[in-house]
Length: 259
Image (cartoon, rainbow, N blue to C red; front, top):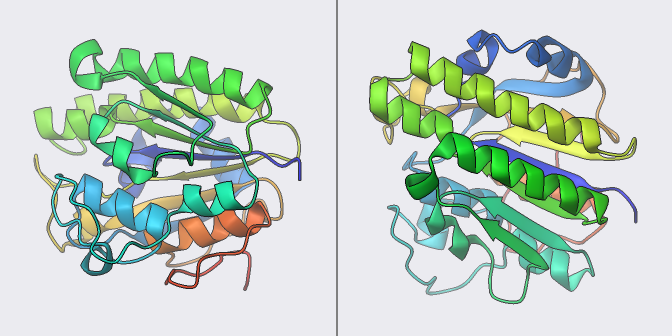
């Protein structure tokens, strides 16, 4: 297996935020990817519960993380990185929000880079993490997770879909495009968000908070395909399938390679 898979997540990025951010890479990215603009987060639509559901393919009611405070699972569900590690794949994390350290168990990562968005600023952190992720691609890492916290920060600071927020999405897309440009021809990029937002908050069961974009570029995905639905729970099974690793039986999401 020599197909790197990169999962890039922009915290709080709404589908309409992606479409309206004004970055020139967006139209091309939409043309090159299989795209759903109606994918769904989970409730509560809060950052850590959503990430735990993405990496463990179960709802928050299953993994037990209902706030941004991590608590050990009573009945642990194997996560994506544990499954990939068991399958002999190398995984690396690049993130700017420290609470995400608990997404992968000790021993499942071959590399991890944390740059504090709170201390360094989420814009500078995104640029530093992108540089480190580019090195990991060159080193032949199988799976990379790259997190961008700036859109969520801007949404809370000045409001979702405002000027600062759209500029934050624009910046995140620019970093993503650098990663895509470095991927080998067989590489796959998955772009999504954990949740959306409205006014200056999120966490509610409303379309603005629950609807997220899901873009699948490269490999077996048909350029320009449009599909409806999709869920955070589907991301881990799809990545496992791309890297030819069997999914844990506990996972609830579907492999998006299977029509």
